[in-house]
Image (cartoon, rainbow, N blue to C red; front, side, top):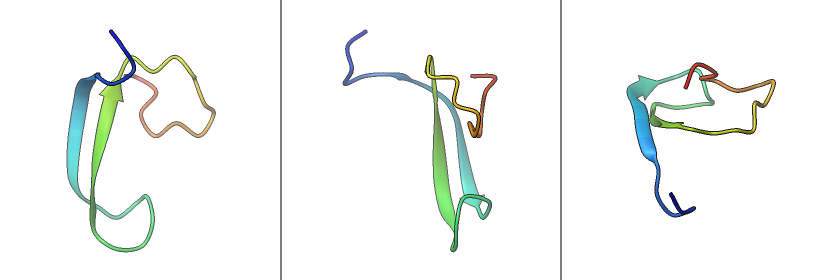
Length: 43
């Protein structure tokens, strides 16, 4: 897989937890960074 493509793990509409306003959040599968603040570590 190159850096311009990825697999979508989940799409969460009407998200109010990631900042002000109403937004849609797209979670990608396969990230290897393991950030401590990751919103979706199971993907």
